Length: 607
Image 1 (cartoon, rainbow, N blue to C red):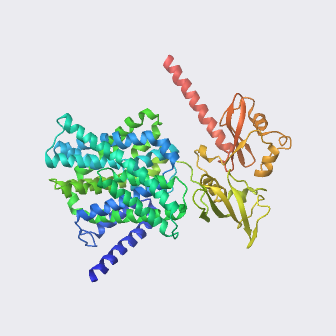
Image 2 (cartoon, rainbow, N blue to C red):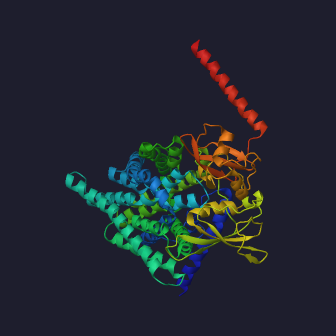
Image 3 (cartoon, rainbow, N blue to C red):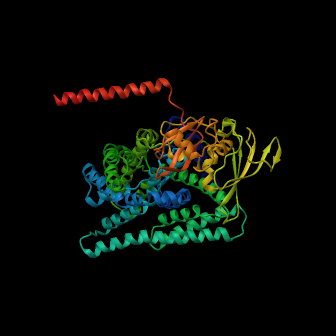
């Protein structure tokens, strides 16, 4: 009885202190997952905590359970658009990329540690895949916004590359233990069919299981609090069944989450919030346990060569694999460099490192220590600098305005809409622009406006005031635009995101009517014009797509131009500030000096 209470006390204390330590560490930019890992080490036998934990079978069980929950949550957050946009490059990185990374890293391990070829390749396979927990955390929980194709590629790759790493690890463990070698077509085909079933079985079970979970959530009449538990339990059931037939349960559970997250159902908010909390708990628990599992003093003998392997992995193996895999998809060099850098290793390699130990591979404990050093190096070097790398590679987008108070209410399944309520912030675009009418994205309508405790249901398209509570019926696609309209206005980054256009307007609409809706300050002679005529009057007859013109504090953008005609006009309610006269003069001076230098060098070259 006392032992059980001590276990509960220690577990709760570790999780609580880890969260507090993570909050403090965020002020210095430390990766939160690194904090959890380090805290586990401090609580271990070499640290002040003195907890002795060497049960690798428990670690494998808990790691499988936690990773399944993390991948389920990752699938819930991956949009169908992101999967479509990044499917090709992500799948190539998750298969060929993992093999290339494992091979190059294994080659470095062979020469730095003097391992046999099979053992060296096993070490490479263990650290060959990026970590879903680390990548999802950096992309979603730290508020880092990246260019859409880059973010989608990293998300999907981290969600689907674990099966390849697991397959390689298990195959190489089998070769080492049983002395099998791929020396004939028969054995090679066996491995090929095994891998094919891992992937195909994971996809089949994932899609069928996702459809079953979605139907169960929509058909069963339950208490609201039971839907998240039902969805999580069924997702784990699909994971376990898929694993039991030799296919990839990790891929299957990711697809279950993806199916549930991209289809309307009756418990969208409840399942999303519950899954987010469970994913957090799974990450904290897994990283703490992996921290407890290692003995820091055992890392010292392998520290230097392990850091050498980590360096090869980070600056050679991952970049080579990324460059070769992304070459057919014409990524910009800066985008390729960033994807190469965000090859984060986390709990997955440590989790895979337990497999050789449980299988009785000779020297597996040393290999586990090497993997641990590689993970620490990756989290410190790459995790600590990912925001800086995004800015340097010019793939970071301006942060979206976040409303301080937004409430959502799901509607019954199949409606495809939800009810959202916003409190108008004094620093929101709506309040600062003093709009006479409330601009709304397509598919959104106002239900009521509450001001000073009085609910109004008439005149709802009129302007709002700070403190008003606006309740609307909207779609999931419109929430980002509403967040920006009702959120606190923040300074815009220098880079311009094409997705920051708030509304798309028909170019045949009259300028006067648009001005009345959005509060645009057209000149009196411009009000009788259509938007197309206005754009031509400002930008000339030969209007190019993407051309912008400012009207007061907003900008109009030529969105669709064909056969010399403007068909759609975009509206940006919060454009970046204009350059000052001093900035403009400085820019032109720099350009003039560059031109003169080029001319001078060209004259020297001719002489």
